[in-house]
Length: 239
Image (cartoon, rainbow, N blue to C red; front, side):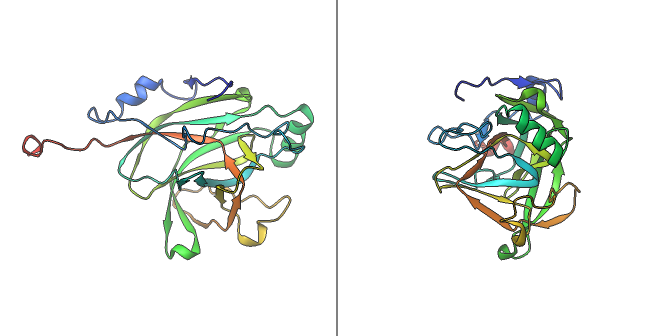
């Protein structure tokens, strides 16, 4: 994960081993969705990526990565299992940048992990919020890459999507990337090009929302620890 430190933060929730024990004993395979050897996390924005002079963060929105290099919809669940943790790479904005984000979007950088699912016609890009975590306070962990265990693992199913909700702001973002990086957000189409669009974070479980904005050349810097259900190989014993 580069020079930034990666560790499991347990102050919010259970230790990694404790979370694993909450998953059925036969589920032993672990996958990290969104973390690829051929497309590792880039440097996060703020105070600015190489060759850029600006600083961007995720703000007041729910979104998910649609493409990372050759990997399409990396946070879409392909089979049932459990989500037990997530990882963020965050930068360290300057004092002036922090002041701007706090004044504009909220004093406490927060993030939730969500389970969403597309509903209705695929062309409408409408998603229902199925589950969400508590809001994690992230400022103490700026300038690091760390993992955060869930109090209770999420049970997920085929075609669920693991998204991030940022009620305020979060410096876990990189832009000016190749066009094979893309993400989708919960803003409506008329807000996609706005400098400061209104808050569009989806936070009410059971609600549906149109994810009308699609952006290329950008990546939300998160991954998800997923434990798929074990496949039965001895059908006679299973009976």
